[in-house]
Length: 116
Length: 497
Image 1 (tube, one colour):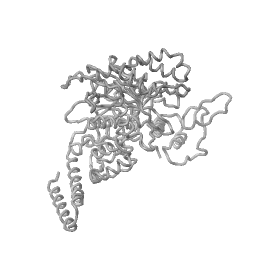
Image 2 (cartoon, chains in turn red, cyan):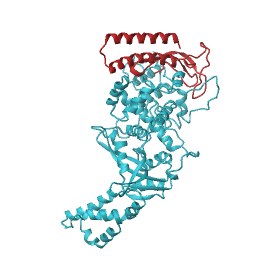
Image 3 (tube, one colour):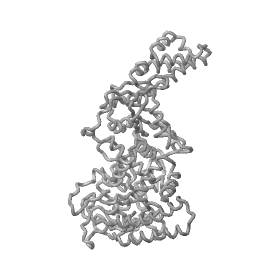
Image 4 (tube, helix red, strand yellow):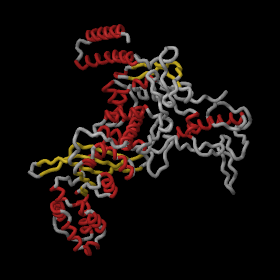
């Protein structure tokens, strides 16, 4: 997790809010709240994305050196097949993209392209 | 060009660790969506989610996600009923008095069908003084159970809620019902010593029918006779009324329709001792289950113009029960847990080696078909040539007790109803897919050209058959797709299945 990046993002959001407020001097409380909320959702999505990917399960296999998880059916260590992205929609419609390693079980099945 | 390889299952350890659910919504947003859709139509739920949280989903997505999570919540609920009784003692003492009530409500299905949803309500009676000084019995601590099922299945499935409310441990229990036989059987199963009470409005209705039949046949009755009879019934019980009916039986029998209602009341005389019941502060009306029907069933399932598919009734009821019983968080967690373990079936799960360096995980992907080894382990019995047997283990009937709920190969939980053949697939689409997958992997003794033709027929290969007619018959007893043909004497020989 890059705290420096978060800090920069926060500063950017605060600056944007200040500019917006200067551009909308007659904005009501609800309008200000909506704008602030919208900006904060962007920060939330970024922080959530970084925090969620801060896990050993994100990248594993022989290349990364992390031990491979085991198949839930036969307990055979999974074979890493590369990384795939998954995008979720969070609060405010902001996208949270997770890039993580996926694997297949050499004993149970074959795989071409993982869904999700 | 060979056939496309079979898609198997991939595992995403991070998804499992984060507890992500299938779909494109974050888990919390999906929970909010399903929660909203438990209260209001899907389109409105999607709109409200957009207005409240800024999350954009379509109506069909809302419907699909809600029905899927509802199905898993239904599975979790059934698992509660089938779980063995917990021997752990609870801190809270057993309830002193409980009231049970059961009833049914009709729900409209597609194709102009109507089905009865059975509902049970459990509450604790609280005695209060009314404004006129009379004691009134109100019900508190209400909880419910509803299911579209036959009477015996409903009785079994209600065990979870019965156990959770500790009905068996309560000192006194009464059952207020409308006199239907299945309600009496239900009470007999769960609490045989319960005080049985016939719902007063139902008794009043039958009494009213008797007097109506007399009036319609030309008989003259004193003014406000019904009102006086009901007052007598409530204050002194049915003895006097039944005595009068017995004395005038020969005259009453000439009025059409009175026999049935009289017999109904005679049969349930012991259930109409309202004076005694009121003296013991029991309720004499089943209003609590009537309002349960309105709250649990009708509020969501009987909206304007709503018609449901049978398979979606119980999932929606499971969501409503979680909401109305104020167990949303608990049931949501259980449903999510079932979603993550859906691919593991008791006959397939092997004991996992516990190792801190190799964490085990449940499947998180949703690929359709299963691996050849899994299909092989499921097959049983002898195979007829050219035809794979029905895979009875692909979806065993949903049941309580020790067996897991049935799951289609695509992951959708299946429901089965008593008296109907157990379902193996959630839809025709899944059935056709499974058939094609079986056909594709089954070794055949056909020539390469014929194999190619068969794959074209199955839709596995999109190319023109290079030879003459695509359906050149090689064997009169087997269709080109491999299905054996049945020839009936006296009829023209079949060429295709």
